[in-house]
Length: 390
View 1 (cartoon, rainbow, N blue to C red):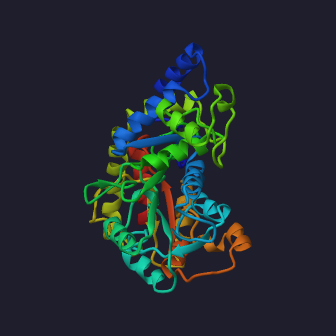
View 2 (view 1 turned 45 degrees about the horizontal axis):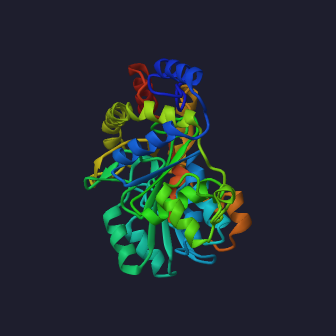
């Protein structure tokens, strides 16, 4: 069988041995120096001023929306657009925060939302925010989307959990909006087993995210920010300051294991992305001339960091044919993330309004993917090709 992911880590044995040595020698394993160093290194890689490490990508999404609500930049009842072709924990926080979710259709040829599909939805409804998902290592016309949001006063934020390292017009995905979230789950570009990150250039948002990450207290803020916050709230006792809670929050703190693994895997990320891109381009050459598949348009993407090997069939019958071929060859496959999120049980339970998303429905019915990672062998790639050639 060719699984979605063969190993938890790039250079797995080396990483596990280093992790074992670290655990044996570490003074503590709760959030500390390793996490701080990983935040600094990740911010530098992403070219953002602030990075806040949490225990999962889903937590990063929820934390981002809670922090924006705490700051008053979003309020209950606000309409928040989201990419209709997405993952559950991109949408669930919108509902959990009391916002109104509004799906934005994608383009079939990019699998991503575009300025065109955003403008089409804006003809029907005004949005206060747009939480865009950069799907499977690809992206839409993010520069144009940003301009639309800027012109209309729409707060743009990005779920970049599947597109770490991708660049559009020379800029990293995750850097087009106010803030972005990232996932370090095992099957993603880099693994800390579980883990996620929120990155932004906005100092006020970063401070609130650090407060909301850890119970609403100020312990993880720089000393100057603690003084400022305590003075504003007339907290004059060092004793009581330890258990003073300034706003709504969670316990999304990571462990030092997360920070250590993040540092180890971040050092290998360029190697990881390069291997994924080589694999994808080899399979893409076959797909571009294949009559049964729609080739993914990515001329606007200056660097592809593929999350997986995506396949968009031209019909449902072809989808059934090729998914059967992959399954019979022992290749593990998945739908294109959660498909049209509006048909998911949780969405139907909590959201009464449905919006047409024709392209998303097509990908839901005709798209699937298999794994793409550095450990794929020549035999694995030839297996993929044989499934596609029949």
